Image (cartoon, rainbow, N blue to C red; front, side):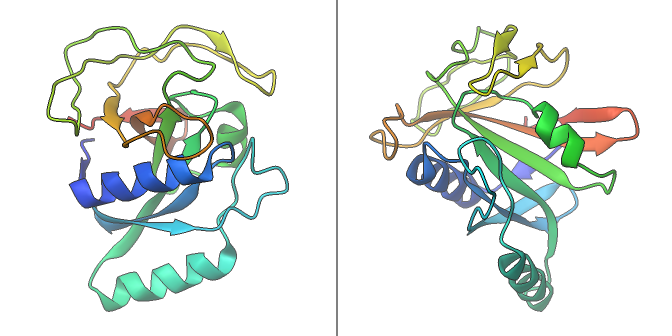
Length: 189
């Protein structure tokens, strides 16, 4: 599966992720299958927003109505990982359902996960190409272990002058969908 994300949607995800740090940002993705036209921020109402997310139910209902009115659909959601994890966490997997929704993760670069290693696919909003790939095994801030993904290529982006939470302003975007066998990467190229 391939996913095209409008530059305005990328900018919205990055700005919201930077502003929410050190908490996780979250919001909805509006578009059509294979295309994200808009990313709409929502309040994170999780009990522990520094390590998990829960989209405000009122926002979820509002954006479903607004998407239908605009001829779009809610095709998934995004959230940030201020700790740098560029793939779904065990918490994400435990809460996911097999429904075809797209999960976009904005992982803060320079946090607890080491910076991406060079690879063939990637892009930057800053006008210069940057390369990135799945990172090595690490321990998250909440003690959760993760291992490298054998699939997918992240999209490395710059979100400006380090807005919010001491972040460098650089994020790696990855996209996923839940299948019967677990999360499957979605190609952002």
